Amino acid sequence: MKHIGTKELSTKRLLLRKIRLDDDRDMFEQWASDPQVTKYLTWSAHQSVEDTRHIIALWLRDLEEPHVYRWAIELKSIGKVIGTIDLVNVDSRHKCGVFGYCLSAQYWNQGIASEALRAMLRYLFEEGDFHRIEASHLIENPASGKVMNKCGMKVEGNKRKKFLGHDGKFHDLVIYGILKEEFLLD
Ligand SMILES: CC(C)(COP(=O)(O)OP(=O)(O)OC[C@H]1O[C@@H](n2cnc3c(N)ncnc32)[C@H](O)[C@@H]1OP(=O)(O)O)[C@@H](O)C(=O)NCCC(=O)NCCS
Image 1: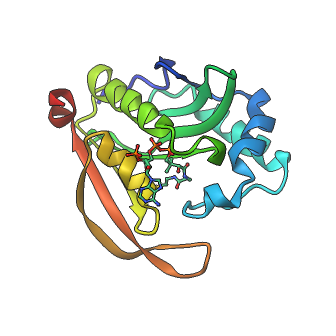
Image 2 (image 1 turned 45 degrees about the vertical axis):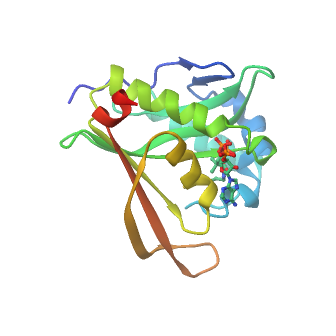
């Protein structure tokens, strides 16, 4: 499978771009330190901006690789990063990927994740060689499913008690997928 990496993508309100080390404070303050944002994620809220710098440094190490697809979401009107969207699992054999996203709570419910997801799907299917993209969300986090649904993804089932949450309990995951031909027809 031919990979094309993290190219800059522009939409009406957003610039999807590679993160930079000098985004550390915005990332920390806007979303990485907020337990409300990380409530349904695999990672916990950062305690200090050093935690955030450490993660950014790890990402920067990989970002030049063509099979790495990881964008910071910059809101054009303020010129600052407010979240991320990325493929967390790239399967070259089957031309598939699994994505995740998170956004500063200050900007929720303004269609921003949907705008970013649409741009990423278009890039992966039209310019990239992907055949299928999938994602999942905790059943308790319906806003994430709404975003996937708005972008044409379909529910493919539930995985029961698949996800160990920060509360120490196992939670059901709802699985969504979309095929290239479905996205291009939409
Ligand atoms: C999930 C997340 C990325 C959505 O971002 P967003 O920019 O607010 O998403 P959008 O505005 O594009 O769409 C959200 C939709 O969910 C709806 N929604 C919000 N809360 C909801 C709820 N409790 N139940 C059902 N729908 C809900 C909104 O009304 C909106 O739908 P609409 O456009 O039809 O009104 C954001 O909430 C987030 O970062 N959450 C924390 C991290 C996270 O959970 N990531 C996903 C892990 S799977």
